[in-house]
Image (cartoon, rainbow, N blue to C red; front, side, top):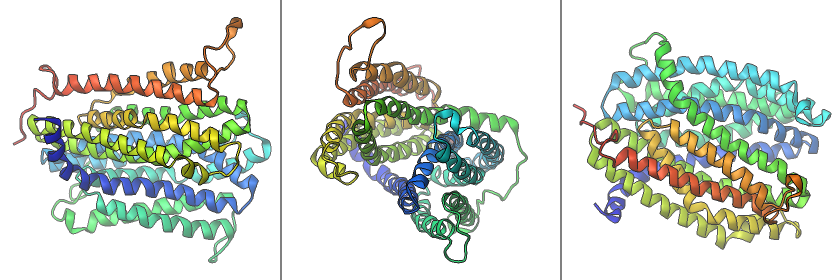
Length: 465
């Protein structure tokens, strides 16, 4: 089957998955925007403390999200195989795992929150950020449970209800922020700490909505996840965590790469740091579309892999890859054609805008390969192949992207060597672009080996009975 035929075949099956997930993705971003916007009215110190707090607790939540993400792989495969027992058992095991991982991560955050000064954070900001982080830490166990039920739904292609809840939760977050941050609606005025407590309350509400839907919706009538209760099984914990940990580490690694870039770029002055941050914010807005598509690809491939039918599975992968290129082209065009408008939405300083636009052009250039690499990752996750993709991605970022960015930026070299190039802050983004090209090539070769090699796992599939 040609690439065009594969695209035509897969588009009507992927779009109903992709569109709700992309809305959920942007709803999550909107909740963060609500926090920043409302914290800005508290004052500069409060906004800075939240920025520091987010930089600390988000990697923890991202890592946990990755661990629990292992569930969506198993659920999607079991759903394709029509194995109801495995879906229910593994979902309950994931809930048990969440009750272990969530509190543990919260305890680590409590410890870290008291030592922010070691990271070079100013004392007044560190004190307030520590209190904010400790409040956020209480929400991590709830987030783990929430992610579990969300992935239980999404792995079975039940994505629209989750999207509706994600949109509703934006208003819920704003409501609790309004109450706890500013002392409205009979709630205590807690400022920055109130923002953290609002997150805990929001997570609890999201968890209640998901639990209510799973237990009461006609969609799951006759196949309730808690119809049979399973005992905690350490072997199942390990199976989920072993699959999810590389994904969590990959998510965290990508987050930390840009944190390291920001640290180096900040040495080049306020204008360079501001331009980098503006470009990063713009890039995240576009990148979220590709991430949502990768999530849809993972579910679709997992369903087909579980069914055991290799022919539609290969057709699906071909269609996914073609669609990822199209999405990348659309994102690239959107960045290039709206570069100044995008930058101006974040900042209006004349010294920063041209530099941010220059960075954005580099970011636009790698949109196609970036969309391909996250989609390739999604395809491989659909069949449970997570180890080598994690190695490919991490090594490319840290062993190629960061060193290349350092060289291209004109940063000083040891032993008196002259810089090989001097592109300034743009050079850092050129280094990441190089890393993305290498990652995409390696992942593409891995997909070929797994799906089209005569000795690959797909070739050995037998249709589920």
